Length: 176
Image 1 (tube, one colour):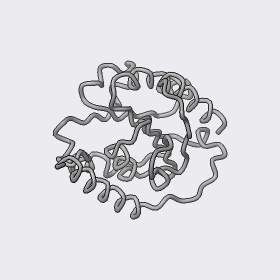
Image 2 (cartoon, one colour):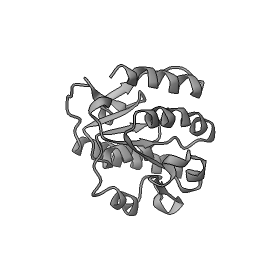
Image 3 (cartoon, rainbow, N blue to C red):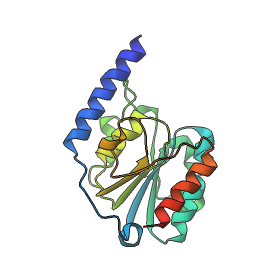
């Protein structure tokens, strides 16, 4: 019961923050072509994390400044090129409501990105709050409950296999 109350409080905080950072209507023409700095929020679960490496390889081929945000113990699992620019967070950066702590928010305070891509397919308030915190004109993520307030571009994907839904994401992004 206590977890349910914490989740509802966290949901309220994230929704309030999302209302403060309104999503602008934007043309996605040449979205990736014109982007210089891209932040990728990696999934929290093990299997999707390993399958999401294909997305990183795709952005490596575009020669864009790609920064990855992931848990500290997973930085070594990233391809070598992304390790030095990775922004990691630990358990200490997650508060009791399972949201980013003030310390983690401060890491992103002066950073600006052209595109933020959230690779978490399942509903995760931590990543939703991270998307709200990060300053970027284009925010891309998978369609989830109440995701309209977080992402300017949503990928609707009902596939359960992580390998397939990341390929679908890449196919969608290649259109831009």
